[in-house]
Image (cartoon, rainbow, N blue to C red; front, side, top):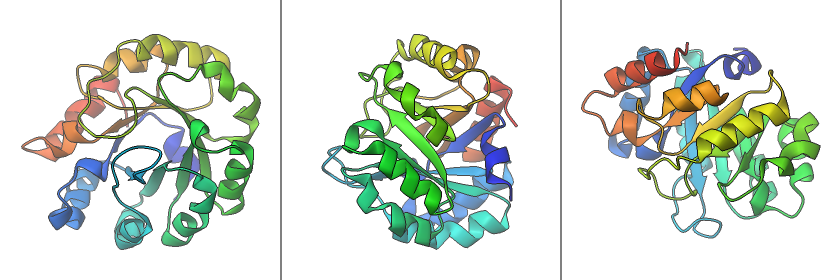
Length: 227
Protein backbone atom coordinates (compact mmCIF):
# COMPACT_ATOMS: atom_id res chain seq x y z
CA UNK A 1 0.00 0.00 0.00
CA UNK A 2 1.50 3.31 -1.13
CA UNK A 3 -0.16 5.76 1.23
CA UNK A 4 1.37 8.86 -0.34
CA UNK A 5 0.07 7.83 -3.73
CA UNK A 6 -3.42 7.31 -2.35
CA UNK A 7 -3.65 10.86 -1.06
CA UNK A 8 -1.97 12.32 -4.13
CA UNK A 9 -4.85 11.19 -6.31
CA UNK A 10 -8.28 12.78 -6.15
CA UNK A 11 -10.24 10.83 -3.55
CA UNK A 12 -13.48 10.80 -1.62
CA UNK A 13 -12.88 9.83 2.01
CA UNK A 14 -15.86 8.37 3.88
CA UNK A 15 -15.81 9.62 7.48
CA UNK A 16 -16.88 7.03 10.02
CA UNK A 17 -17.99 9.85 12.33
CA UNK A 18 -21.43 9.31 10.79
CA UNK A 19 -21.32 5.51 10.60
CA UNK A 20 -23.54 3.13 12.57
CA UNK A 21 -21.10 1.86 15.20
CA UNK A 22 -23.19 -1.23 15.85
CA UNK A 23 -22.34 -2.20 12.27
CA UNK A 24 -18.99 -0.45 11.84
CA UNK A 25 -17.12 -3.28 10.14
CA UNK A 26 -20.02 -3.85 7.77
CA UNK A 27 -20.26 -0.17 6.90
CA UNK A 28 -16.52 0.12 6.28
CA UNK A 29 -16.76 -2.93 4.02
CA UNK A 30 -19.67 -1.36 2.11
CA UNK A 31 -17.77 1.79 1.14
CA UNK A 32 -14.51 -0.05 0.46
CA UNK A 33 -16.32 -2.51 -1.79
CA UNK A 34 -17.67 0.56 -3.60
CA UNK A 35 -14.12 1.76 -4.19
CA UNK A 36 -13.13 3.84 -1.15
CA UNK A 37 -9.48 3.48 -0.17
CA UNK A 38 -9.07 6.25 2.41
CA UNK A 39 -11.19 5.94 5.55
CA UNK A 40 -11.39 9.13 7.59
CA UNK A 41 -11.45 9.02 11.39
CA UNK A 42 -12.66 12.17 13.20
CA UNK A 43 -11.26 12.28 16.73
CA UNK A 44 -12.76 14.82 19.15
CA UNK A 45 -11.93 15.26 22.81
CA UNK A 46 -14.63 17.42 24.39
CA UNK A 47 -12.09 20.23 24.92
CA UNK A 48 -10.84 21.56 21.59
CA UNK A 49 -14.36 20.89 20.33
CA UNK A 50 -17.44 20.17 22.48
CA UNK A 51 -18.21 16.58 21.40
CA UNK A 52 -16.32 13.46 22.40
CA UNK A 53 -16.14 10.89 19.62
CA UNK A 54 -13.70 8.03 19.07
CA UNK A 55 -10.09 7.15 19.75
CA UNK A 56 -7.28 4.70 19.03
CA UNK A 57 -9.33 1.64 19.98
CA UNK A 58 -11.59 2.17 16.95
CA UNK A 59 -8.59 2.66 14.66
CA UNK A 60 -7.12 -0.59 15.93
CA UNK A 61 -10.45 -2.39 15.50
CA UNK A 62 -10.72 -1.63 11.77
CA UNK A 63 -7.00 -1.44 10.96
CA UNK A 64 -6.59 -4.93 9.53
CA UNK A 65 -9.85 -4.75 7.59
CA UNK A 66 -8.86 -1.48 5.92
CA UNK A 67 -5.25 -2.44 5.26
CA UNK A 68 -6.11 -5.88 3.88
CA UNK A 69 -8.45 -4.17 1.40
CA UNK A 70 -5.60 -1.95 0.21
CA UNK A 71 -6.76 1.14 2.07
CA UNK A 72 -5.45 3.57 4.66
CA UNK A 73 -6.69 5.21 7.84
CA UNK A 74 -6.61 9.01 7.87
CA UNK A 75 -6.98 10.25 11.45
CA UNK A 76 -7.96 13.87 12.10
CA UNK A 77 -7.14 14.89 15.68
CA UNK A 78 -9.51 17.65 16.79
CA UNK A 79 -8.01 17.56 20.27
CA UNK A 80 -6.10 19.87 22.55
CA UNK A 81 -2.34 19.20 22.59
CA UNK A 82 -2.43 16.57 19.82
CA UNK A 83 1.25 15.82 20.46
CA UNK A 84 0.10 13.90 23.54
CA UNK A 85 -1.97 11.53 21.40
CA UNK A 86 0.18 10.96 18.32
CA UNK A 87 2.00 7.87 19.62
CA UNK A 88 -1.26 6.12 20.53
CA UNK A 89 -2.64 6.56 17.02
CA UNK A 90 0.63 5.46 15.42
CA UNK A 91 0.54 2.28 17.49
CA UNK A 92 -3.13 1.72 16.69
CA UNK A 93 -2.43 1.67 12.96
CA UNK A 94 -3.03 5.18 11.65
CA UNK A 95 -1.49 5.82 8.23
CA UNK A 96 -1.89 9.59 8.29
CA UNK A 97 -2.50 11.92 11.20
CA UNK A 98 -3.76 15.48 10.91
CA UNK A 99 -3.23 18.04 13.66
CA UNK A 100 -5.14 21.27 14.03
CA UNK A 101 -2.90 24.30 13.79
CA UNK A 102 -4.99 26.02 16.48
CA UNK A 103 -4.80 23.14 18.99
CA UNK A 104 -1.13 23.24 19.96
CA UNK A 105 1.51 25.80 20.83
CA UNK A 106 4.15 23.83 18.92
CA UNK A 107 2.61 22.54 15.73
CA UNK A 108 5.99 21.93 14.07
CA UNK A 109 6.95 19.54 16.89
CA UNK A 110 3.63 17.72 16.48
CA UNK A 111 4.17 17.32 12.74
CA UNK A 112 7.68 16.00 13.39
CA UNK A 113 6.27 13.44 15.82
CA UNK A 114 3.76 12.28 13.22
CA UNK A 115 6.40 11.80 10.56
CA UNK A 116 8.86 10.22 13.00
CA UNK A 117 6.11 7.70 13.76
CA UNK A 118 6.01 6.69 10.10
CA UNK A 119 2.73 8.40 9.28
CA UNK A 120 1.87 11.01 6.68
CA UNK A 121 1.35 14.41 8.29
CA UNK A 122 -1.64 16.65 7.69
CA UNK A 123 -2.21 20.17 8.94
CA UNK A 124 -5.77 21.43 9.45
CA UNK A 125 -6.96 25.02 9.67
CA UNK A 126 -10.34 26.21 10.92
CA UNK A 127 -12.62 28.51 8.90
CA UNK A 128 -11.44 31.62 10.77
CA UNK A 129 -7.73 30.83 10.36
CA UNK A 130 -5.92 32.63 7.54
CA UNK A 131 -4.35 30.33 4.96
CA UNK A 132 -1.07 32.25 5.24
CA UNK A 133 -0.51 30.66 8.64
CA UNK A 134 0.46 27.37 6.99
CA UNK A 135 3.11 28.90 4.74
CA UNK A 136 6.11 28.26 6.99
CA UNK A 137 5.04 24.66 7.67
CA UNK A 138 4.56 23.38 4.14
CA UNK A 139 7.86 21.50 4.07
CA UNK A 140 6.65 19.44 7.03
CA UNK A 141 3.26 18.33 5.71
CA UNK A 142 1.93 15.87 3.17
CA UNK A 143 -1.41 17.62 2.80
CA UNK A 144 -3.39 20.56 4.20
CA UNK A 145 -6.96 20.29 5.45
CA UNK A 146 -9.21 23.30 4.95
CA UNK A 147 -12.18 22.93 7.28
CA UNK A 148 -15.38 23.95 5.53
CA UNK A 149 -17.40 23.93 8.76
CA UNK A 150 -16.41 24.79 12.30
CA UNK A 151 -15.02 21.55 13.75
CA UNK A 152 -17.29 19.58 16.01
CA UNK A 153 -20.57 18.02 15.04
CA UNK A 154 -21.24 16.18 11.79
CA UNK A 155 -24.02 17.21 9.45
CA UNK A 156 -23.25 20.95 9.44
CA UNK A 157 -23.90 23.13 6.39
CA UNK A 158 -20.99 23.90 4.11
CA UNK A 159 -19.56 27.40 4.62
CA UNK A 160 -19.78 28.96 1.16
CA UNK A 161 -16.75 31.20 1.65
CA UNK A 162 -14.67 28.02 1.87
CA UNK A 163 -14.56 27.93 -1.92
CA UNK A 164 -12.58 31.16 -2.09
CA UNK A 165 -10.41 30.00 0.80
CA UNK A 166 -9.55 26.74 -0.96
CA UNK A 167 -8.64 28.73 -4.06
CA UNK A 168 -6.40 31.03 -2.03
CA UNK A 169 -4.81 28.01 -0.35
CA UNK A 170 -4.13 26.39 -3.73
CA UNK A 171 -2.34 29.53 -4.87
CA UNK A 172 -0.26 29.48 -1.69
CA UNK A 173 0.75 25.79 -1.65
CA UNK A 174 1.25 25.32 -5.39
CA UNK A 175 -0.08 22.74 -7.76
CA UNK A 176 1.19 19.53 -6.16
CA UNK A 177 0.30 19.50 -2.46
CA UNK A 178 -3.03 17.76 -1.78
CA UNK A 179 -5.77 19.92 -0.27
CA UNK A 180 -8.44 18.21 1.78
CA UNK A 181 -11.86 19.68 2.55
CA UNK A 182 -14.03 18.48 5.42
CA UNK A 183 -17.49 19.65 6.42
CA UNK A 184 -20.76 19.78 4.53
CA UNK A 185 -19.31 17.89 1.57
CA UNK A 186 -22.01 16.54 -0.75
CA UNK A 187 -22.74 16.29 -4.44
CA UNK A 188 -24.03 19.86 -4.20
CA UNK A 189 -20.82 21.33 -2.75
CA UNK A 190 -17.93 19.08 -3.73
CA UNK A 191 -17.77 20.11 -7.38
CA UNK A 192 -17.10 23.77 -6.60
CA UNK A 193 -14.48 22.78 -4.01
CA UNK A 194 -12.78 20.62 -6.64
CA UNK A 195 -12.77 23.45 -9.17
CA UNK A 196 -11.16 25.70 -6.54
CA UNK A 197 -8.33 23.21 -6.05
CA UNK A 198 -9.40 20.64 -3.46
CA UNK A 199 -8.35 17.05 -4.14
CA UNK A 200 -9.46 15.10 -1.05
CA UNK A 201 -13.12 15.21 -0.02
CA UNK A 202 -14.20 14.03 3.43
CA UNK A 203 -17.87 13.10 3.64
CA UNK A 204 -19.63 11.58 6.62
CA UNK A 205 -23.38 12.16 6.87
CA UNK A 206 -23.78 12.46 3.09
CA UNK A 207 -22.49 8.90 2.70
CA UNK A 208 -23.42 7.04 5.87
CA UNK A 209 -26.67 8.94 6.34
CA UNK A 210 -27.84 7.82 2.90
CA UNK A 211 -30.16 4.89 2.33
CA UNK A 212 -27.40 3.23 0.32
CA UNK A 213 -23.92 4.43 1.37
CA UNK A 214 -22.28 2.71 -1.61
CA UNK A 215 -24.45 4.61 -4.07
CA UNK A 216 -23.89 7.89 -2.21
CA UNK A 217 -20.14 7.30 -2.27
CA UNK A 218 -20.10 6.59 -6.01
CA UNK A 219 -22.24 9.65 -6.78
CA UNK A 220 -19.81 11.84 -4.87
CA UNK A 221 -16.85 10.29 -6.69
CA UNK A 222 -18.55 11.10 -9.98
CA UNK A 223 -19.28 14.67 -8.86
CA UNK A 224 -15.58 15.44 -8.41
CA UNK A 225 -14.23 13.05 -11.05
CA UNK A 226 -12.24 11.19 -8.38
CA UNK A 227 -10.73 7.72 -8.39
